[in-house]
Length: 190
Image 1: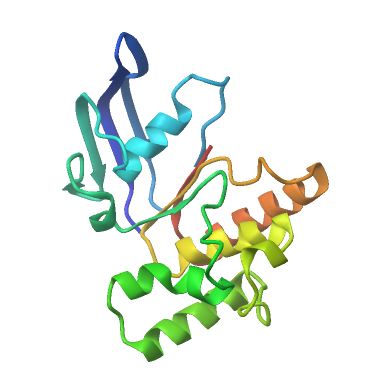
Image 2: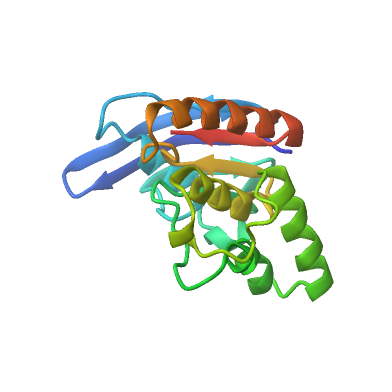
């Protein structure tokens, strides 16, 4: 998995500078956590890495490739959103398979990868349920599986545990770290 480099990245919203000339290297297979008060640019930085937000200045590299202006779907990144962003009308299986279907992978490969992801996040047997039938922790695992099933080179997590109670948050924090180590993936966590 490649390193992620930000070189003098700046992002402004009107007169407000959300990210100011940030230079940072996230090493291959490293898990980096952004900590700071609300409004300090953590999520904006994550969204710049993902390609959801284009910086006003600077460059973003994944490995040796400059992805500053590359669309999100071409960056080989998995993203776990704060609110999980699960499709309520789709089953667990369909939610996890969504990105693979967009990539037009063969049905058997989709099936194999979804089952592998379900096993990885310990949700085997729940593939026919809908998000409303799951606990908060299970929904979070579906969102994580949906990101991991793509076999991304970088995993970005935007406050994925903020909607969970303290005990479950602690358990899931440990699980995410273990998955990151097991998969040997570069990850950024807000």
